[in-house]
Length: 305
Ligand code: ATP
Ligand code: MG
Image (cartoon, rainbow, N blue to C red):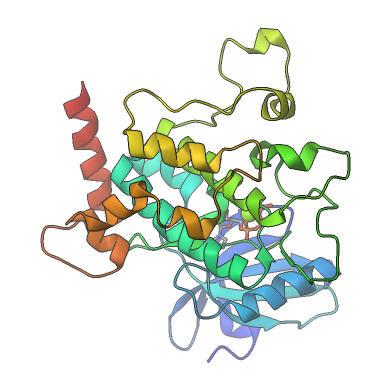
């Protein structure tokens, strides 16, 4: 129903990065709220790719939905998206929730993996999975966003060249310059594993305090040290799940599809309560909103002390 960018009123900047600026906007006629990503400098090949990917991912509940693309002036492209009220997981972790309980992580993991498996089955590699690119609705639906460096892998090409994305979340094989072949999709799984671990422990897993003196870079740690260790208080299923994601050898790393069958995910889905959010159906006594999840986490934290 939105015909033109001028039908929209900009309300607020939601974020800005390499790709452009994202605004919360209001459709003047209907008062409906959307998100609008404005990319300056016009349509590079990568921007075309981002748009192509958004246009072919319209039937997954775990991919941010694109509702239109506007190329009005010569150097701006605007992408209209559904508005994700609760924002991105990096901000949520810092503000509302602090750190997340295992049950919530299992929920986030299930939804992110469903989105990732959907992308990978379409031969789309995201290449920039991290907390700020996972967005959340008011109902705690988690969706993958930001296809700014993503790629549709055509069977004929060598997809392994060109390490793009955010260094801190890149898998070890991407830093290996020997030109060895690897599976590009496995890189997304590594990034998701690191992301989920970060959400649980409350900070980025590499570069622990006290190690600065050793003068090692994050990339050095990713390549030459053991993957980060989960805290002892995590369940065995959860620790094992993270281990399956953070295999340095990509041939041993699980795929998104395999991880969906991991006991950590399966047992969370079987639980009543939060499990119902995972399955997307409302049940009595289940946590329905971000506010309620915030309360649950607060209670959990108190009971730990
Ligand atoms: P970066 O370079 O930081 O990754 P980017 O320019 O590629 O950013 P996006 O990641 O798409 O752009 O969006 C930047 C930020 O804007 C997100 O981290 C998120 O906080 C916010 N944002 C993006 N899309 C939406 C949306 N549909 N609903 C709500 N917030 C959004
Ligand atoms: Mg981003």
